[in-house]
Length: 307
Image 1 (cartoon, rainbow, N blue to C red):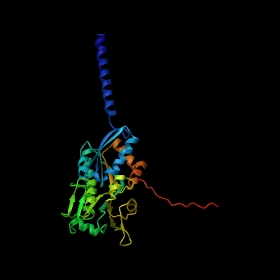
Image 2 (image 1 turned 45 degrees about the vertical axis):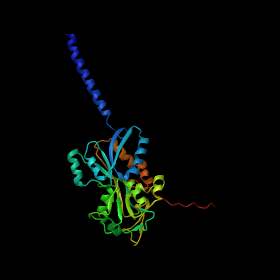
Image 3 (image 1 turned 90 degrees about the vertical axis):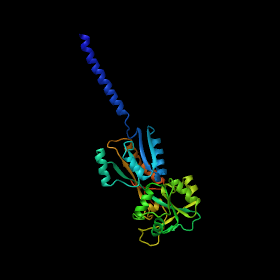
Image 4 (image 1 turned 180 degrees about the horizontal axis):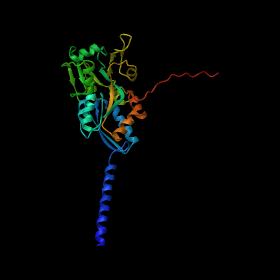
């Protein structure tokens, strides 16, 4: 009788112990800002700079793994609706309606914000006669009035395609002279080998003067000058550079957003914080984009002559 009384108590203790142990083990498998793995989708036009972000982040936090899929902006937003993708990096934030839809599904609104400012660079072949464009001329090319072949970075709705249709064409359709290739690097290849074409790519694919691959392309292509629409002085044109973006001179500028589905601090929050703080912002700066979270000002100084 004595043993029969003790055994059920011991069994209950063991069940409680194993249950607690399993719960702790499950909790330990969840990612944290400095540990674990996460899947994110990134607009392909931002690939060069985001690859640098992930490289430095991993070296700083070796217990983390950020799995990235590079794809069109539309595909990134489709991924955001799935449970497996917790973050996307795209060129637009969420509308109030989109936030409300996510809130009704998730029980909370996703976070989103601007990390940096990028540009849609207009590129032409080195042998091209035209490398200076007004916005009106670009509009005529994109709507087909000017029959020069324009090359885009994807057949689906990429951020570059959406931006040009919204900002230059104001919702009008592209002309039949606008063609698509698979990704930004192929745009560079096509324009490099065809003097009669014009291409549109994200600045991080062509703006880094220290990248040997980009320097090799710049021997075959040129970044075009585009009319400054905000400048008080007329007939001013600007190339897509960090300075022209910062001063509002280059008109085809766009933000680089993160959208994050986390209501607790996980690896998505950790990676977002990394890109938002000094090291991440410096990476954007060194990739010749304009950091949005931190200002890195240049101060002029004078060295006085010795008496």
